[in-house]
Amino acid sequence: MAKVKTTFYCQNCGSQYAKWQGQCTSCKEWNTIVEEVVQKPEKNDWKSQSNSTKRISKPLRINEIDTTQETRYNLYDEEFNRVLGGGLVKGSLTLLGGEPGIGKSTLLLQIALKLNYKTLYVSGEESQKQIKMRAERINPATSNCYILTETKTQNIFKQIESLKPEIVVIDSIQTLHSEYVESSAGSISQIKECTTELIKFAKETATPVLLIGHITKDGHIAGPKILEHMVDTVLQFEGDRNHVFRILRAHKNRFGSTNELGIYEMQGSGLREVSNPSEILISEKDGELSGHAIAATLEGIRPLMIEVQALVSTAVYGTPQRSATGFNAKRLNMLLAVLEKRAGFRLGAKDVFLNITGGITVDDPAIDLAVVAAILSSNEDIALPSDYCFAGEVGLSGEIRPVQRIEQRILEAEKLGFSTIFVSKYNKFNHTTTGVKVQLLSKIEDLVLFIN
Image (cartoon, rainbow, N blue to C red):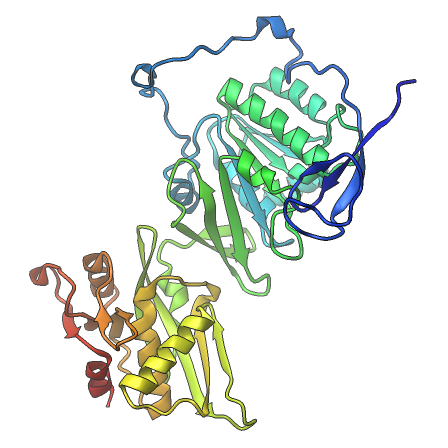
């Protein structure tokens, strides 16, 4: 019997060590190094055929490479296509992560049931009957989706060879195991080995592979960090399980932008695409309330109108509280300091709470003006007109700085029925292209005059 070989891996970064030690020298984390059994027999290719029949790659000049036949797969889901950059690239590996129960399996099963391409859905977590029950609820009329319940990669590749699917979905990468590594499924070495085999298969056959990945309690994808480096696209499915809306973001995308955003609504029949996100980001209310302002922001190429809510009250516990949900708390403190220094508002002894509705997080500096307007509205207890919106960045000197693609924000405000949009006077745009009134501001004091 061959001697059992063991090695030590860091569960955080995947670094390999010859013996155990308390701290990983690569990522500086403590107590993350574990021992795993490793057996490395002579490996065949992912295919059952002999390696001698493999095609050998040859170097080509970059201008000799033909890409005219390379088309993306249309997933028949506008939100998913937008986040990917226009569809699924042939031979790509896409990793989808998210909280347990957020809807990762439902989203990919729903897409697999829509496709006209032959799709293989591999599940290591559910039986075929359980998946059939979910499929009946989502889309019972489909015939191009094949279901396989298997966790051993060698058996999966045998089925792929006989079926020859155009798209493969793996649910999930943490449940797979390879016979070339003896450690348990979900370990560092198994995830690396299984992902390597899938990458080799995807690149050699030009078959796109969609992977579902579990996440840790810290919100990071479980497994070594090298997993995110190996795949082509990393998507994050976010949202609160207690709410119906889900947000799809791209954290890494080799074939498109990482600034795109997809929004879904969870329903009994699956996930519904939300083509007009402003319908969920602006709350309905009967009367005018103070502390509310609408911001014109952008996520990638998509304009969004989001509602900013602020509450300013006297600090009853002595130390004023500063709380922000969906907005950078340090930037909130900066804006409060600007209001106190440049506009003369004494907010140092007051509690300030800020919330971005819809459960999304916004990094666009163009919402600074809306944040300031909401804070002033709550502080003075004056309701802003519901047909006003704001798009401007606030500087440390109190000046209103211009923002990018202002015309697109103005057109979105006009489309949604807003009468006035407040922007920086330093923005360059065509004043005759819109019917909405554009109010120009140069400094924060101009905004105070309009509110009062």
